[in-house]
Length: 494
Image 1 (spheres, rainbow, N blue to C red):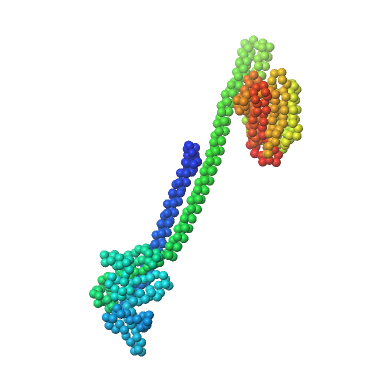
Image 2 (cartoon, rainbow, N blue to C red):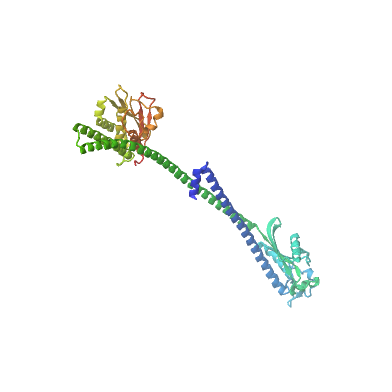
């Protein structure tokens, strides 16, 4: 997957935005699907719990009714709260008197269930009701919902369940048919019922408030949980894209460097093959000539001496070229850890080292005093100043003794050093190419075009930058470069 993202970043016109948007959309859709599934499961679970609770209470009422029917009802003391049931006047021995003279009245199952729900339903919040399309007591008459349920029983339904409003509150209403048993005929035989007939129905109304509150709590926690998962996913995607962008940027930088190195290698191969081949041809030619003369015993001492001098000159040329190539390859590497370098003293040492060359060309070297202490490799930094001074002398103007100023300007975390001359100058279009390896802008001077390449590599290895300021030819040039000063966070030298 990371390869797909990375490939898309490199090929898309809007790499990061398009791939991030696509993955973000897929992630969001996945989370929404999972969240919707969880919410649906919560809804179904809440409904199932409410239905199980309603059925449990229905079974309780049924068990109570079956027990009462099994005993043909029960006799209870006659009170104001429980008067004799006028709708059971046709039942023999509806009212009896105990031997002690206590008045008792018969309470049939429907009367018992209604009174139990009237008195005690507040304890468990669920109201039960026995009703019928043909009731003895008008108080047991069905409401519109119960009427529809009783009619459904007559059509063969075995259970009616529905979420509906009752007294302004959401309730789960459940009703099942009530079949006539032998015990029912004691009270309802005069209505023409037979055993097995549908007498009516027994129902319960379960308030849903507590279930709805719990469902809302679960929904809220589910939404919060999946929102956090969504945000964590986006954070993970953002982190992955950040790492991929960083990796891709680093890879592009490395590819750029590799392309640059390959270009230098191509130039190197061409230059070295040409420059090394030339002295080798000289060596081979004059060595063959000497051998032929020796074989023919026609050696001319003066001629042989001249040929040997040419061979040695070619060997020296090859040695100098190889030495320059080795310097270029080592320029970006430091064998020593960074140390404090007093630049003024270092430049003065370099000037003393080049004193013979300076004197030969009557060069005026002006060194700014009290230059700062920098961090780096003194051998490499010394090589920078030496190459720049040698270049300033080498590319001097005819009949103009070189005047070379060496100084610095300060920045917050680094020093900007400069080597300024009054020489030939560099055209603006050549300022960038001048630092390329094997690049010679003036073919009148001998060399291999490696000096400034070495300087650039050393400066960059110390975490600095280098550039040239020059208006045009014959106006002189100023080479500026930065180096980290002491106590500043200096880059690691490779």
